Length: 317
Image (tube, rainbow, N blue to C red; front, side, top):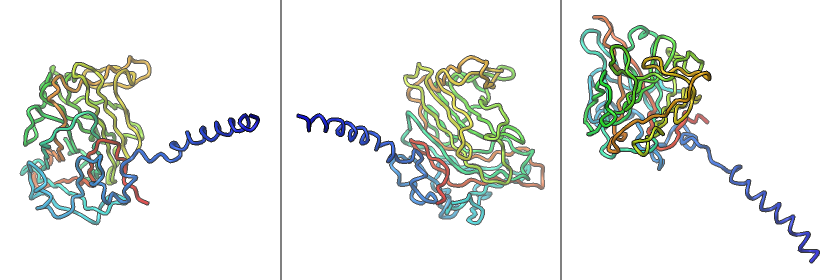
């Protein structure tokens, strides 16, 4: 009996220690941490799509549903993000001849619930003052389309459209540009993208002539009557902002959400009002319609991954 009494505390200690083992052995939450230099990341079971921009322009273009200004595209293996063993895509415009170019991919199988998109982008200082929309957009159309159809300026399309982007808001900062079911109208009652960051922080600073890692997460609202959708943005692995049901605090100033502890809780995103509207497209966009004649500008993209879980920056070692 005495032996049993002495053994009971030991057994409890063993159980307690065992209960902590999963925490010590827990794998990284970032998909990229499992793949050195992003090599093989496309094979991860949580990855929905990956683009390394290898194989030459002809083969790259063949992977997309709709292409604009393919002749203005090229690849570069020498100027890539640190740790990347892939190529970069360069898209170039010609002032007053074309307004840039894009690669648009329609997914035949739509994605619901949570979607993450991570990519690297390099904004050249020579483009300062000429940027309109230059980033990777993703979202959904209902019905699904084989070409981009943002329907800029139109409000109340919660059954038709979702568009999410994170791009230069001005010469010094990045911000969101989102179209959604309950988006707020701006000037003259028209609906252009809502911006959610509105703070020139170190995390959202636009870094000219440097590769930046951008990642955006969208959690769809379910059921479609609920305001339980979320949006989260990271830049170079650091959180820029996270918006969801009852967080953060702030207020709407026309079509801009202003984050401030003195405000009221953000209601949450009702991204859609029709369950048929899901994430079904990816749009690599370079839209520069202000370059004067005789000049050209460009942008570079690299290491794009779309997944069901957080991806994170490239693992370098």
